Image 1: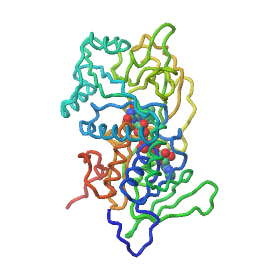
Image 2: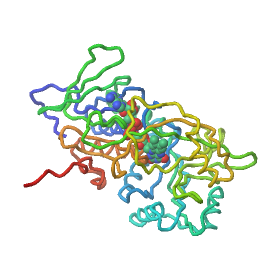
Image 3: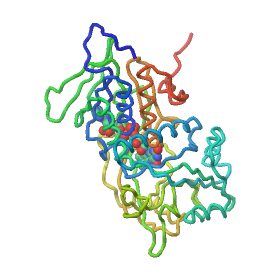
Image 4: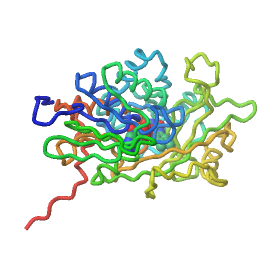
Length: 406
Ligand SMILES: Cc1cc2nc3c(=O)[nH]c(=O)nc-3n(C[C@H](O)[C@H](O)[C@H](O)COP(=O)(O)OP(=O)(O)OC[C@H]3O[C@@H](n4cnc5c(N)ncnc54)[C@H](O)[C@@H]3O)c2cc1C
């Protein structure tokens, strides 16, 4: 990035707005490049009010959503491992993962497409092999097949974000938490960042050369031309029935079709407190969630209903009952979270039409695993470096309508 002095004085080379999954890593990767970074987070890193709460997130390398995501997942895993080392916190647990569904489903075809494109060591499974690999997944429709992704696993989102923010600070970033940005104003020389700290009538503003907007569900406040739909979702956990098992040995990371239903579910088994593999992950019950296939209502991220109402979990309970005879279908735990959808289900990472404004977000329900590497891609875009992989399918400008001709 060109940091030559000019007529304006700057508070930093780059501001990062929002220090959640992508933003904390973007701040880290920018600071690691020697850029002067000013980061803003309206809450505290690891908070429960954005898109990254809920104890765990699934990690997969054979990414059914797009084969171009595989190199991003692998780079992300390296960075998560680096954060594990710097923080001393366990962040990633490799469990392997199983995908189960009709052979011509997007779930199976998409997984195999990514595996073939990158020569991944996945295994194709028939019904018997599915039951052997994951006894809890033995109930399937006739004809369903499985794919085993040995590199799949579980991440700890809150701890990972805290670790990335700490790494950013250690690399020299100035991170301001409890500070809400209210406006970004790009001009010919740079960008003015206006804040509204709690209780401050005249909160300070800052001048930076460039800005990375990584505000998750709130990105639309700053970059309305990127079409994002924040949407409230409910996450659910389930306990095994008395005398039955549903831990990670029998129920590793999974995405699978539901017998008798035209939909998928995703999740992972339980990791009891004290389990040797827990390594500080903390105990949790099995997690099961529904496919999110839209259409989605746009919810105001500042006005999310945090209460879970009677009847709201009936749908997922029915899917659990149809799939997993070993689980109690009534949830043992529930919480709310915000998912932010793009029109094509891929993230938005890179430059906008304004050369000083960059974006990293658009989770579409599958970005946490990639977030450390998405932070790296944001940093490379801001710094003017070539991306470590072809990420053109994530270009935020892909939704711009073509200018009228004639
Ligand atoms: C139910 C559910 C399940 C999911 N499961 C998976 C999964 O299994 N695997 C996977 O890979 N992904 C999964 N995802 C997706 C993933 O968790 C999220 O996409 C990802 O964590 C979002 O990261 P983000 O950085 O875009 O947003 P966030 O983590 O929400 O970060 C945005 C940050 O910006 C801050 N901010 C916003 N506005 C301002 C402002 N004005 N001033 C200062 N700060 C601001 C917010 O407070 C927040 O901290 C799931 C998502 C959901 C909702």
